[in-house]
Length: 491
Image 1: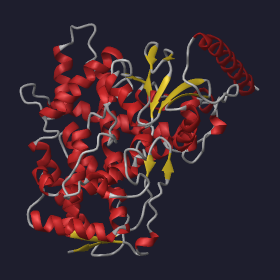
Image 2: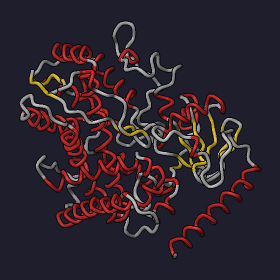
Image 3: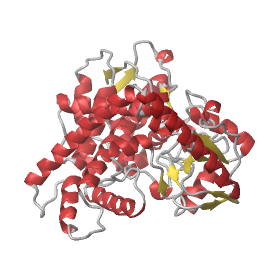
Image 4: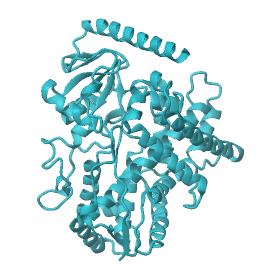
């Protein structure tokens, strides 16, 4: 009885909000879009399996700047490279806001670098970028960490002795260990049960966020909080990650030497002490916990999923795998570990890795942006508190930017002489002031890990190339590739 009354009251409140928000927006020249229904908005018009594809279809009618209502939340969707670049780069200050996604907001309690805005975001982003650079992100020190981790990866793959195995957890351990070196100052054994459990939790979180239930939580959090379902278990698991991070922070506090910081946590703790008398500082415990969680989660699943997808692609396209191996053998050989300088001499391999990222399109919606004030854009007004979606899927798969956008084709990144060529529409990490802080780290990991694996192994699968399905298992917040058992045959 009490639940029914609460539910009806919630519905009434949302109905009133929707009604008055509709009245309020009549004074704005909003971008066009389909007419919404009360309460649910345009939800029924979106494809459940891959909602970003629905936005592409609507753009044929309404153009590259469109208004939708997801529940009672107004959303403006930006479609195509020109539109996304104009917003995120040319009008960067207007589009710098980050939407307070309910799932991420609850997971981080509103703290950290991921979904913060204003002074909190500015302080944390500046500090995070400079600290990660100091510890070698995109430079020689980090390269050596990745090379060292690649040795552990290769050694573990050899233990399978040509028998089929699922590489999902192994690749998560490998990639996560690089982030752990940066953030915690240590790598974890592949047999560490606590570490393996945390990686399984991260995978579960990403899958939930990319499922229909995850999408519903972000649209109707007030309702999903009151309904039974997996969302409650997921938030319980997030607390396990929080507890792990808090334990690591306490270990750092107990052993901190301010004259010799070991990692990101040490640097943050030193900054906390330096600014303890500053009432407007954002360097405090809650932001440290949430930012470490942001880095730990974001730095694990996306890159490991991309490498897993890369192996599936190379099994599916055996001729491409062989051509990469020929190029790698001629430039590096099989003895020494690849480094980032080698990329200049491996144009075909570099092109394949770029095309893997473009083709997978791992975050088709990007992380949504937010209008922190009324924004004028292309003759329209985007009202304050509007969620803004730069549809990266429409950039990475745009027909006027790519010769064969829906096919895997490394020639997208090669000129007529076989040299690597850049494409400005290659934006898997987004663009502008909210672009991914770990972009240079991810690029380095993808290149070194993939090239290293092809030095040592030829990859096949038990059912042959035709059994590989490159259509993502989940397509919503993220495009998550399917798991396949693979065979790593030593060369």
